[in-house]
Image (spheres, rainbow, N blue to C red):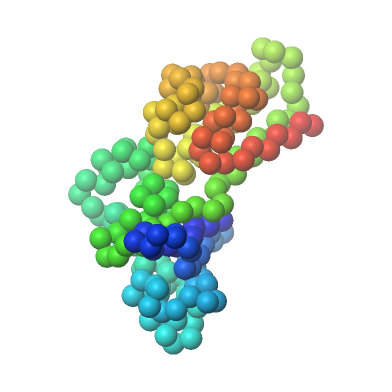
Amino acid sequence: MRVFEVYDSTKRRHKPVATLYCDDGAESQGEFRIVVGPDVQASELPLMLALFVEQGQRDIPDKWARKWVEERIPPQGRQNLGEILRANGLDEYDEVALLAASEGHSAQDDFLLREVTAPRVNYALVSLEPEGNAEEQGLAATVGASLARCRKASGMTQRDLSEKTGIDQAAISRIEAGRANPTLSTLEALAEGVGASMSVIIE
């Protein structure tokens, strides 16, 4: 689950008017839901959301929340889609990652999004063996894949992450490819760089 606050960028105080929930879990089929704040007036909202509030509905279901989201991301059939995906460090079309990368910018209105819960990076370090063992190679690949997945989900390229953390892009590339054995401090810096938290379990 990823959560974004919706706010009016033209207002001096970027007070959230609604919350967008993006359930991108394996069983959810990418469902969206928007909940409008209890004290927010219809006049403070984007038109589509205002129409629901005027009818007394503040919990907007997937069908309509998705329509609002789709106004803020390039459609799958767009001619230069491959270019857009590469610019955002994505290998495949991902609605939520594109939404996060653009901060929900749309030509339709002045409302933007800011993420309040970022994806988690969970590193499960199981059966650690002495250096050079095959298990270690498996661990490096797992850590690298987790980092790459989280970076792409946050809409960042390796270059973006390098600039944000000060860690060389070539080193990030080696880590993601499972060809490096980074320190915990390096992993923590990279996790923070993609807006994630890191949990390490040693058994």
